[in-house]
Amino acid sequence: MIKNVSKYKIITYLIIAYLIALPFVSDSRSTLLLLTQVFIFAIFAMSYDLLLGYTGIVSFGHAMFFGIGAYTTGVYMKDISSSLGSYFISVALGMLFAAIVSFLVGILSLRLKSHFYAMLTLAFAGLFLVLAEKWRTVTRGNDGFTFNVPEVMYDRVVFYFIVFAAMIGVYLLLKRFTSSPLGHVLQATRENEQRTESLGYNVLTYRVISSVVAGMLAAFSGSLYVITLRFVNTSVFATEVTLNALLMTIIGGVGTLVGAIIGAGLFEFAHHWLSDLAKVHWIFERWIILFGTLYILIVMFLPYGVVGTFRKWRFDRSVKKQVKLIEKVNDNKSV
Image (cartoon, rainbow, N blue to C red; front, side, top):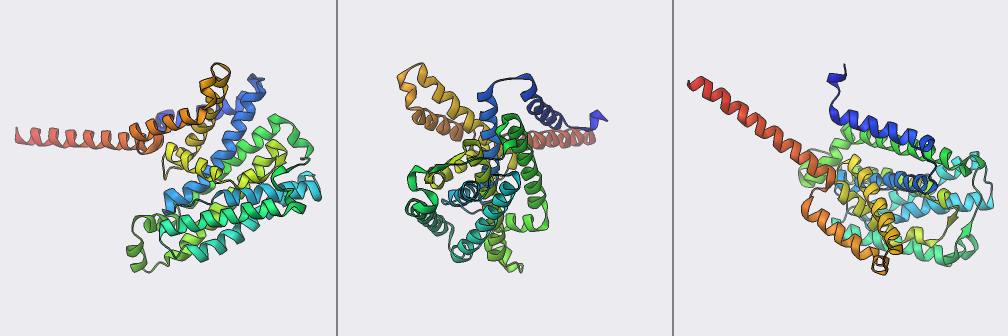
């Protein structure tokens, strides 16, 4: 039976088993916090990959939905209640707000060409950033505010498993979504919009659906993110948050959900590692320059991202094997 399971699946199961066992064999608080951040940003990157990789939409305003989720949870936990039930309600409200906003933004802007859409999403994200800065009675402006979280989430191990389970759940959900007939239509719009329309599909409707799903998942990741900090401020709406998701998606491999997870891991570990090097030499304080260099090297040598390049290598190897097999059969026939 084991022979029927590919070695890649075995490696995946071993990694999952290691991540499950890690809190019981390691007492490192920083490692758990780092992995928790990786899981959260993996959800955020997967939501962005649904737009960029599967629908062909470039968005510069994805942080808007991340911030909506973060602020909805933060405000609800501070001003109404910090119980576990309240947290679930705040997450649901954040995802609902994000769905409404992404629907409206999608209806208004997805009729445009991709670069106009990207600029409009950037403008909408800027609007939300200004709103968060000016509406001080609710958001406390740039200063932000702290809040209490459900008692069970103070335990870093419990929260680690909650976020880990959430990431696995979102991955399986998106895997099913992108494999469904609806997901195939999204990929068809990405490949050729005019031909998809000629087949009778309303491209705008499918793109709006993709935008709404991506926005809701981004809000979900924002709700998880602020729980790790127990603090929220306007930085959750910053353009840098969207660019980070874009980098994670490209590094891992556009159009590969696993790639988004790997990209988030590489991004967060590189950030953590390069920041730590600042203790060794002052030059590493400019870690963003080193990270930029690392990113350029990845794009140069892995143009399809980590997972995309690996899949291409497997595909090319498979084609070569088939060509050799055909040549061998033809040689035998000629003899």
